[in-house]
Length: 264
Image 1 (cartoon, helix red, strand yellow):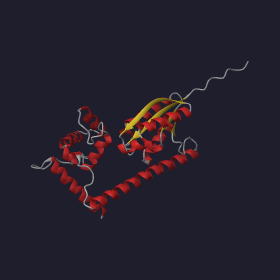
Image 2 (tube, one colour; image 1 turned 135 degrees about the vertical axis):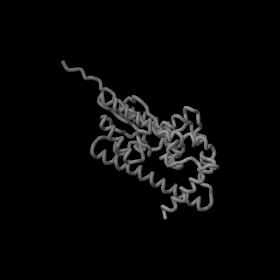
Image 3 (tube, one colour; image 1 turned 90 degrees about the vertical axis):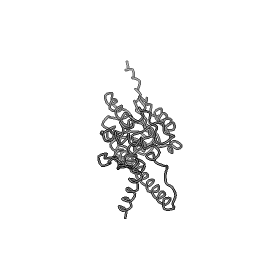
Image 4 (cartoon, one colour; image 1 turned 60 degrees about the vertical axis):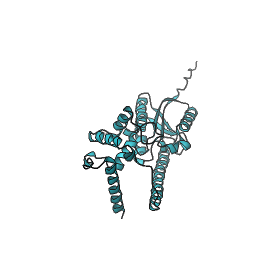
């Protein structure tokens, strides 16, 4: 009497989605990413255990500052106890456009016995040495593309500025300086960008962009970098008799002057 064949158990999968800015939503937004991941899961006979989303987070942010990616890797660690599974993304560049972050994510997933899979059928969907090589090349091209975008953007802004055109929107430091004061005080207390963003959301402070629903760590980080508040001890209070708006304008002019001198 032959043995009864046991039904094949479905593969367990974790889904990760990311969109960094409004412009991406038209081309590869969260809905499109979700649809691609769901289709990929069906084709591979996988059941998605959990979904993890980073909405409004830059691909350059480290893993610990992205709750979605951090949560996805934690879910992969939980899958390790049951034999591993898949970490499905719509495209590899959704993980990051930074080689170090991409490689680190793949390494952590691998240690959790999870294979990172692109729903777009990009080269590298596997665990063989050839797949690893192709995946590395795809990640390198994503990082290269990001650098090209930055160069083109910087050149376009420089040309517009040279032509006397206003570049960018009026900063929040001029429209709502009291918000910057709050961020500054929290930085002085040693709060991380993630905790500052959470505190601003809890207290109901509106984000800089009118179309944004909430503050993100990347938003706080970009403001601190632009205003020189990454090291708050080096960012003194405005001189007596000078408003915050005047002080920020002075800081920005000095930063621009320093940048020109560095490039010359």
